[in-house]
Image 1: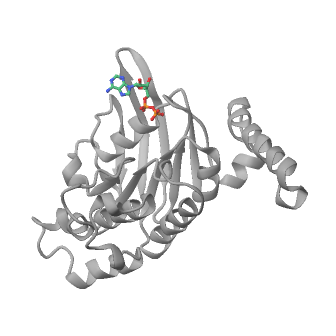
Image 2: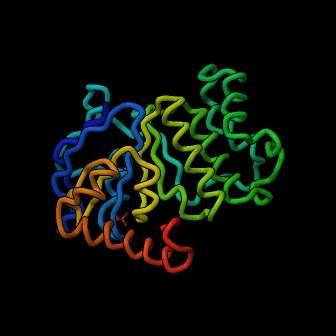
Length: 250
Ligand code: ADP
């Protein structure tokens, strides 16, 4: 349903993305995973329509979107810092984008999204009165009411910790499955990508290092970079967990 064909981008003669070709299915959660500076955000912005690619094509449900403007693509993004309006309360933030889109969603549908994200008790709160997880859920609700055709999330878990992180992860999974919405996530954290995604696109210096399921990536890393980046990091983590808590938890 989303197809990237040989997407390439340079900044000042530096190749940032080099011939990225992938196909993504409806309802899939895909993580773009790589170290800082590997080109993840650039790829996300190209899909969104915010950044122009130098070469390549992007198709959505068979339609060539390469020259389609960002606002006409119907893809929506939740930014890393949520970009909520501090002078509006949670509810006003959620419905803000609907101002000029009367009739796009009914009040019942808005209420459904609010219930789905368990935001009812927080609607009248100022943004500064919300926890990190609540802010993230308001940002998700604000985006979902716009009925995006594709949901893009930039480091959605990086500002959250522990239990909240796990609950937002589950929430993202249920958005994909229950709403059959395709979600593309940028992350630098292998553990997040492995536990959240159906498939992971590992990018190294603008090139695809591997595109596969978490199982494939752990059991069949295609090259030394993937081994180093993923497998070693997880082994170190397992070793730490083993040392601290014993075998049954590692
Ligand atoms: P990541 O999201 O993986 O950290 P980015 O896509 O943000 O990586 O950046 C990839 C490379 O492109 C980096 O070297 C970065 O400095 C460069 N880059 C990103 N945006 C611009 C820009 N607007 N102008 C010049 N260079 C840029």
